Image 1 (cartoon, helix red, strand yellow):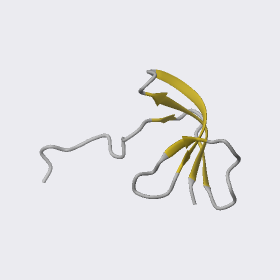
Image 2 (image 1 turned 180 degrees about the vertical axis):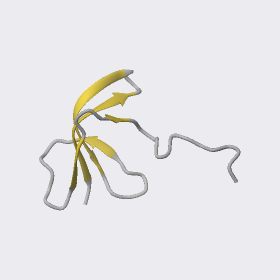
Image 3 (image 1 turned 120 degrees about the vertical axis):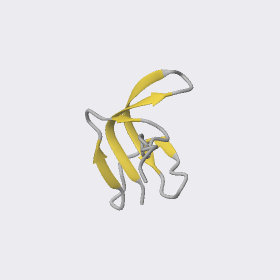
Length: 68
């Protein structure tokens, strides 16, 4: 089962450009991300990404240095 992000904006850091479309995130710890070249399968989780921005590597974008 993969995660299919529909109609999402993402930043291509190599080209330093914003793109718009559908992305597929493969299962597993690496979570390989690819452009969607086919409709989602019935087993895929589909997320409506309208108005959202997908960024690589930001699982938790904050940290509390002095919490404890």
